Every structure is written in structure tokens, then in C-alpha cells.
Amino acid sequence: MTVDLKKIGLFLGPLLFIIILIFPAPSALSTDAWKVIAMASFMLIWWVTEAVPIPVTAILPIIILPFFGIEGLDIRAAAAPYANPIVFLFMGGFMIAVAMERWRLHRRIALNIVRLTGTNANGIILGFMISTGAISMWISNTATTVMMLPIALSVIDLLSENPDQLSENKGMKNFSISMMLGIAYSANIGGTATIIGTPPTVVFAGFMEETYGYTVSFANWMILGLPFAVLMIFLTYWVITRFLFPNRLGEFQGAQEVIKNELAKLGKMQIGERRTLFVFGGTALFWILRNQINQLVGLFLPTLQFSDTSIALIATVLLFVIPLDYKKGKFILEWKDTEKLPWGILLLFGGGLSLAGALNETGIIDMIGQQFSSTQNVGLVIMLGLTAVSLFLTEIISNLALVVVFLPVVGGIAVGMGVDPLLMCIPVTLAASCAFMLPMSTPPNAIVFASGYLRIPQMVRAGVILNILAILLIALVAQYVLPSIFDI
Image 1 (spheres, one colour):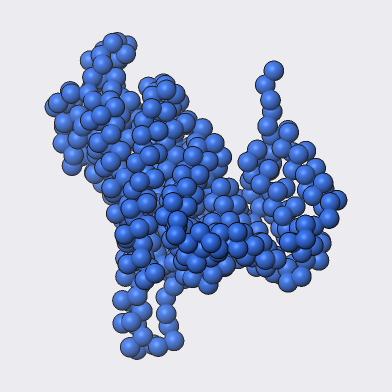
Image 2 (cartoon, rainbow, N blue to C red):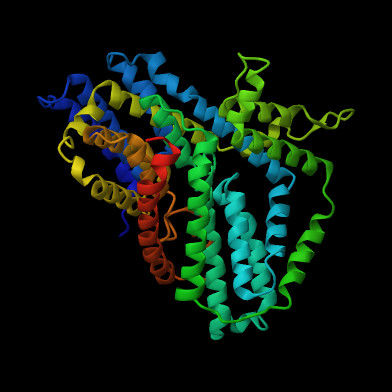
């Protein structure tokens, strides 16, 4: 008899909510704080069990906080985080991703990167990993994996002299395993390179601004995230191809032919693709050089200053107003294209920020921090522990739900220890995107597992080693890189 966690969670969430409310608040907590804990428990259970769609759970703060009349959290205050600028920044990133997918620009970029990596077996794997990571910086890791998997399968089929006997050829078998793992892991890691690359980083940026008034810019995050992603991808490549699944196949003669054929199918760049590239490139440039551009603009128009969000929204508008054929009313994007946008994730951001705001407003975060006020001397140990907890928890629950619930706790611990919250929250956020062990950990893992080239023990074997390496790399980044980037 199988246990249906969704059905259990559906009833357990509201039941626990009611039970907590029935009991009086502990002496250390106010009545309002106790109500917020009841709401947080309700949301956590529904998020973990996915009893209802995750974005639906995110709406609960707008209902519960005003209903109980919690001081300082009326309907306006509860709803305000859903319109946080970070939400619109991510929406702009989504729009660019939709345009890239509509005109297949992301596919052309990926194929050209792979084309440059040569015909060596390990070089082909590396090319796919770099391509996947580069694309995942800008569009969802799921969409990236779905795009890259058919290309990889074509390469494997062509390079296998007899695909039916693939399992008997250890070199080709290891090559196939490495390709599948490389694509999934690079899709997860690549998103950490930019602030819009993966939902946990967007939640982190919104949380820091909402709770601590600290704005994490696109450029600052990229200075941190890009080197981390590059190092992690190359570590992953080395572990997979040189240590766990060496193929020793050497040169392949047919690999370039597959890539050339795929590029030929795309044909020449169409006008929509070229103009999408113009908007995408310009937006990325403005995000990266925003401070320098603002200084230059300030010489002539002191009141005009670009933010990462305003740049994203300008790009969004351009996608709908730059014509492809003005007479026929054709533009880079049509509104019907936005049906592909994961609008629910934007709701989830808002719900997470609203919950974090309630935890802060009622003093719960301060109370958590006080419990760690005497642990200043073991900051690195606690940071490592929190990073490990985040990484291994994200193997079994949504990384987005995890950071939404976990960041307020981590921030409170950091403040209680007298440590800048960035030093604790960034490692936890990075770790949440490093789920390598199980097919159900992330959509990319599940997608490549469905190819049939992988077994769970193989993914677990690779995942355990990479999880440990990720924790160590994150610790080094937090200890030696973070302070200089964020002036801590």
C-alpha cells in the first residue's frame, strides 16, 4: 500500500494550523508571533508535500495575516511583497527567455558552443556541459535540459556503431552516462551564475531587500556566481569523466557531422532571431555595466538612474514593440507567447517574501537570532552545517520552497551571531541549486534519468561526491570571496 503524501499533507496542514492556534502562545512569543508560526507550519507542510500547487500555498499570507488582525500586517502590507521589484526583474528575465525559445536563439548558441569543442569524446561532453550551463544562466534549467537532451541523444546514437549493443561497450556506456549527468548537473549549476538564472537566487535577492534593505545587484551576484558556476561545472566534468565514468574513447569522427546537421536545420538567422539577440545582448550588457552606465547618464540627467528591474522591464517592452513586419503587425513577442511564462513562480516569490516579512515583523527572526548570540566563535562551522542542511534537504523537497522557508531562519541565526546575513544566506542559496543525488531532486535530473541511460545508483554515486565538493567550494567562496565582493 503506497502512502499518498499529497492527501496526507492536504489535511495535515490545516489541522496543524488549528492545533497550534488552540494552544496558548509560549511566554517567549507574542500572540501575533504564535499565529504567524501556525501559518508558517501550514504553508511548510503544503509546500513540502505539494498537497496543492505550490503557488496556491503562496497566496495564504494574503488571506491569513489580515484575517487574524496581526499588527502591522493588514491586507496592504501582506500583499505588498507580491509586487516587490525583484518579482518584476524575474518576470523580465522570463520574457527574454520566452523570446529566445520562440526564435530558437538558445539552440543556435548551444550548438555553436558544442561545435567549437572538437571531436574528442571528453571534449564533446565538456562542450555539452558548457553549452547547457551558459543557456541555463538565462532560461530555466528545465527548458535548457529539454532542449539539450535530444541533441545529446542524436550524438550518442550516431557515435554508437550498434546502439542495440550499447550496454556491452563500457566506453560508450560511460560516455552516455557522462553526457546525461553532465547535462543535468550543468543545467542546475548554470542557473547560479546570474541572479535571474534560478528561482532560489531571486528569492534570496528579494529577501535581502525586504528584510535587511540590502540590494544585491545583477553585477555583484554575477561576479560571485559566474566563477562559482564555472568552477563547479569543471569540477563536475572532471569527477564524471576522469574518476567515476572514464570512457577512454578518444576521437570521434561523426560528432561534428551531427552538430553541422543540427545547425543546418536552423538555417540562416531570421530577423526575429537577430532582433532577439540584440535585445538579449543589450539587456545583459546593461545589467553587467549598470553602475558605469548610471555614472555616465548622471552627468547629463542626474535624476535618471537605471535599476536591474527597470532594465528588465524596458527589455520586456522592447520585445513587444520592436517590429518584424510592421505592416502585418508582427513583433518579436506576441502576448499569446506569455502563456509559457511560469506565472505561478512569481506568486511563490511574493508568498515567500510575505511570510518572511511576517516572521520579521512579529519578532520571530530576532528570537531565533538570540539563540545563537553566544556562538560567534564557531561561525564557519555553523555556516558549513547550514549549507549542508540546505544541500541535502533540496534533494527531497523543492529548492524554491526550501529557500523561502529556510532563509528567514538563516538570516536570524546570522544576526544573532553578529555576522552579516549575506555570509550565511548566500551559501545556503547556492547550495539549494546543487542537488545531484536523485532523479526527483530537480526536473533536469528527472529528464535525463528518463532517457534510460542512467540508473539511480549511478546518479547517487556521482551525487554524493559532488555534494561534498559543492559544500567545500561554497565554504571557500564564503570565506575568501564574499567579503571582498560585498564589502563585508
